[in-house]
Image (tube, rainbow, N blue to C red; front, side):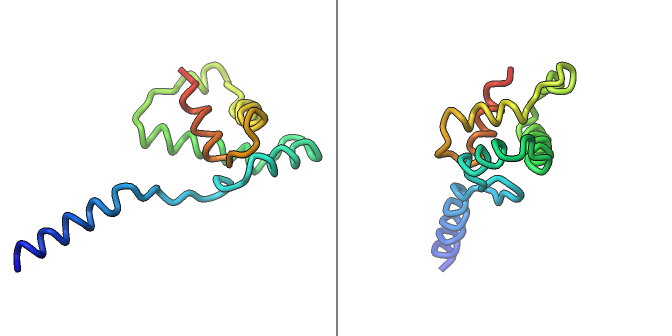
Length: 104
């Protein structure tokens, strides 16, 4: 009986290991929708704020030192826009992940 309980716990732990974290805000917004809205209205303040918050969370999650973003005033919104333009089939979270990786 103990063996079955231990097996169940191991199964539950590994079953949840591949589950991604829940994302909020604009993470599921399709790049194509973002690009169309940007073309119509210009910079979307909500998405601009979302990308800053997303990076803040990723920096905390990964422990990366990205002071360069503040020091050089890197335009994260513009990089997100460029990444989405390169592949409009992504969502904003996927594009933001690419931007996060390319920043040294």
